[in-house]
Image (cartoon, rainbow, N blue to C red):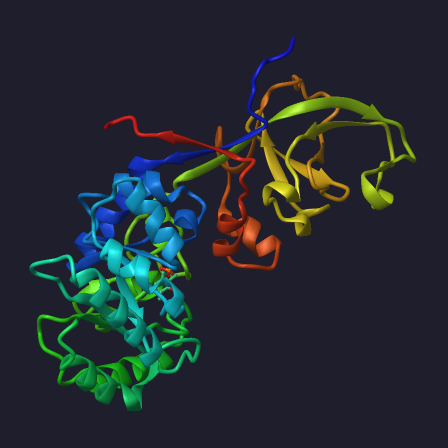
Length: 375
Ligand SMILES: *Cc1c(COP(=O)(O)O)cnc(C)c1O
């Protein structure tokens, strides 16, 4: 028997789970929700996720101007916030599309102002460019130094073309057990923004901080990973549901004779006659090659180990001798099947990385299938 399908591998995305997670975080923190949908919503699909969270999120956050444009072109009318000061080259697009952008220097302010002047010529009532000042309180990867932030804000405040819509910082160690550096960053942030008016949105919390550091909540929280049902650390104060199931199918079943090896380098040697299955997923799809001879997949509700090196397009798993496995049968790489589950965190740990990297690397060849049953 052969199960026909046109899909090599698919990522089933449960949009309702994402919406429930967003509501849970919003209720728990009681603050505005800046839903982080950068990097194609951590691989889940930015347009689908943004549509799902249209009425839940107060604002969407992305990393790049291209990501912001993608959402606008998909008719997402919510406020869209660009998390990192863009290169001045992008000023035109920011002004034209009314994006809200992070700023931490003067060149980008000058470019935004020049662009705005050009666009204002045609307008009766030009609106101001809305910016959020990025304040570096110790992560040292972006933002204006906390000692210089108050002056930058004061100078920016009197520029008529701009509205300081928000001020924010980012925490370097919020997911760690020891919260002392987070508290130091929050102190630096609080004193840098002492004279910022109440109407300005102040925010600092990524997922980890939103979940476990109430002092970081200010006016809005900025979660990404937790929207997708994954905890950044060990603490789990509210229930969240993972939203993806990565599925493929068995494409080949064979017996390999004792003494033979499997895949490049023949790193796995078969000691007795062994039944194996081939699956058409590899590192070219974003499945980490580091899981060669280490990872498992689910077939028929059972864990079966990956043997030999994972190739660009294929992997091989070891079956039990009496496994009754059909070509075309469902294989789960991430998610649940029967009573078994392989989590994103399990894959990340085995690959010696973080769940963020596993999610954002799931490639274009993996077709996204959206479940939105109770729409
Ligand atoms: C990515 C990012 C977030 C979201 O972080 P999570 O850990 O996924 O919640 C929030 N703020 C900034 C500035 C980011 O770059």
